[in-house]
Each structure stands twice: as C-alpha cells, then as structure tokens.
Image (cartoon, rainbow, N blue to C red):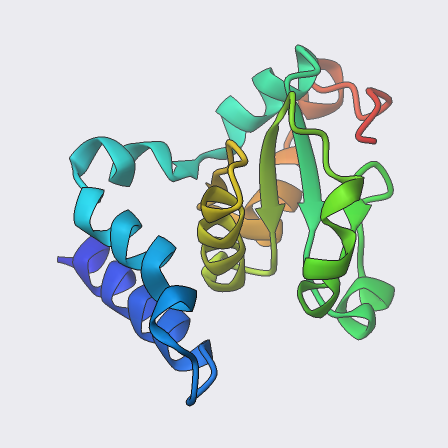
Length: 155
C-alpha cells in the first residue's frame, strides 16, 4: 500500500511539474514510460544502502547529492558529487553513462523524481530508498568504515 502511495505521489509531482501549456510531444516519453511500468520497473527503480555500498566498491555507481546548496552546506558526504536538483538539466554531461546513477536527497522523494527524469534521458538510474539519512546512519554504525571505502572515485 505504501509503495502504491509513493508511486502516486511521484506521478503527481512529475505531472504537476510539467509546464501548463506544454504540447503533447513533451509528454510522449513519460506517457510511454507509464505504459510500460510494471513490477520489474518498480523493483529496478530503487536501491538500498548495502547494495549501493557494494556497487560503489566495484566502481559501478555514481552517487549524486541532489539537495539544495543550503542543505548541502549544512551537511554533506565529501565523496558524493553535488548537483542540485534545479541544475540537473544543464549538468547532465557530468554524469557517467557507463555507471548506474543514484541521486540521493534527505529522504528519497526528490531522488525518485530525478531518477525518473534520468531514466527518460536514457540513463540507468535508481533512487536510494534510505536517503542521505539512511546512508549516514549506515556509515556511522560500528565496522562501517572497514566495509566501505569512500576514497573510490565518484566522478
């Protein structure tokens, strides 16, 4: 039930973010995405911290902090690239198409929106279900520093 509510919220946010006077062709890609949406896509759109850590160890993922500049200045993880959500369209060239792109925000709502945006742009992307808060908790647990090497390149 919670997953359905999350999907409904995501769809609502994406639809309300579209320009009021957008012509039909601007929504065609999103229409096609929704028509193909199934349980496989639902599973593939998200990632949890342990899988993210493993993919990061293998250098197969690029983690992007999409929070605002103010949020980022309050708290950040230095090994994560920062591209605020409002700068994403202009900075797509900074993303590595050979890697899974994982946008992260405080919880996961904005990351889910950016993940959909990236998918429609042809990227392999997932959003971090646990958000920055969950990632921080995971990294601060006993033994986490031995199991995770934040020195891996995120560029």
